[in-house]
Image 1 (cartoon, one colour):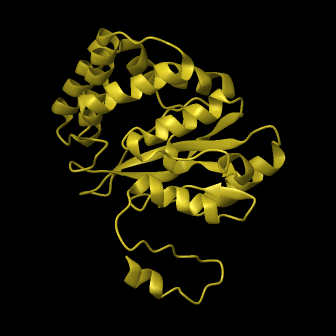
Image 2 (tube, one colour):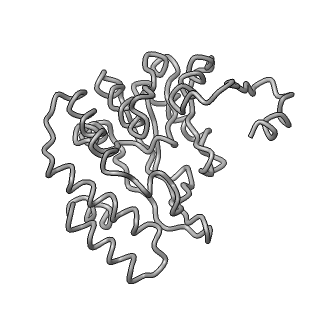
Length: 238
């Protein structure tokens, strides 16, 4: 809140951007990009918890790997009500597999974990009309433009999972819009069946994450596997 930010108003490194009215998440993100003057831009969502070594780890990675423009990491999902860890995500580490994920209409990085070279990020903007698919959109455009991506295997964020979150209660229209962006960016054509199957997988997998009853958890995991067996097996065995 602005009240909390006011407590840190004496910090020279902190710049607070205030809007007179709600202009949407994408416009807020773009305002931050416009104002950024450091070497790197780091994304962090308010619901998540950053491990104390995250910034140092990603900064060092980009300093040592000059060919990489965007670096993310895995996350540790944890339950909002119990604060207990659920599982670690399984994002691809190398550029080629990250690119394959985006070309399939999937996320190759977990957006709240990214650190990006500022000069690269300033070439692109979030689009408010693509809200709820805005992260896929911007990073798919960045990777399609030829910029190199990587993920650090280690989880550097704890990502909160709760029943009321937008990501848990994902709508089919969001999936449909994401695949429309995929087709536009990568010049592909996604069938309605593929979209329905992916929606069935993602909906059941997210229910698996938040379920507390062990029997119910693995029922949802089994349902997710019916829709997208390869994806679930990769998560289990990797």
